[in-house]
Length: 298
Image 1 (tube, rainbow, N blue to C red):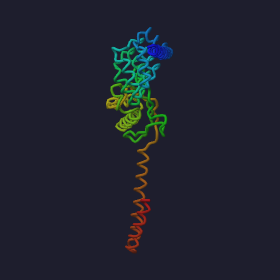
Image 2 (tube, helix red, strand yellow):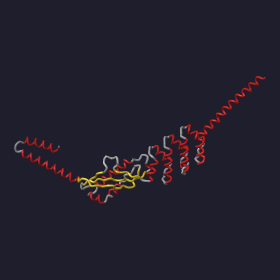
Image 3 (tube, rainbow, N blue to C red):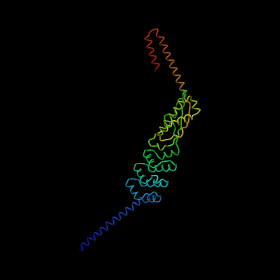
Image 4 (spheres, helix red, strand yellow):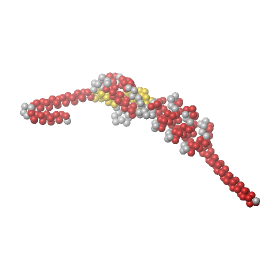
């Protein structure tokens, strides 16, 4: 009987020791969790971001940076674009796990909201995951950017075109564009805009009767190019096309006329020499005509 009581007492002591160890471990674990997440939790609590301690622990387990999500959510809530705009804690984590730039997307949404631009969270994350800078796109929608045509990196610093009277004109243009958020995914880039505008300018000058008409009214080029809607299926909307510089080049028509006259004279000389040798020997005359013709072509 006595041994049984001692055994029960011993088991009780073991249970107390184990329980104490578990309790201490649990307290230390809770303390460690609070020590790690307490600051983020307090920030979330005081700003109304709605992120709890368990949410922060779950982020760590899912390999999501709690600090990035919490501070981004706080930024969104403070700017007035919280859960009702689709910026939820879960959606932020999903975009983070997809490899997106969460703070950049939220900053873009804030800028769009302030500028009264229609942009929702789903569209912004899609643009971000497509590799486009969504914040830059929103800023370009608010403040249009200017593109040089031709581009600064192009081999030539001007576009050359020839009017109907044969005079060459050398032109540089500046294209003002605004980002088209609806076409940002899959839409053509700046290079396409530059190529299309360049082609339109060359075509407009080529359809002018004289180079003087273009020099007197450079806006004629801009109007004709804008009428062609060159921004279709691109990520930009063309606001304006301004002719920055226009110079007169060579008289290509006159050069062609001189070249054609030289060819005509050479042909006449060939015929003259052939006629001189025809009374003597037809074979020699034929060979001479062939050789002179080849020399003329060369």
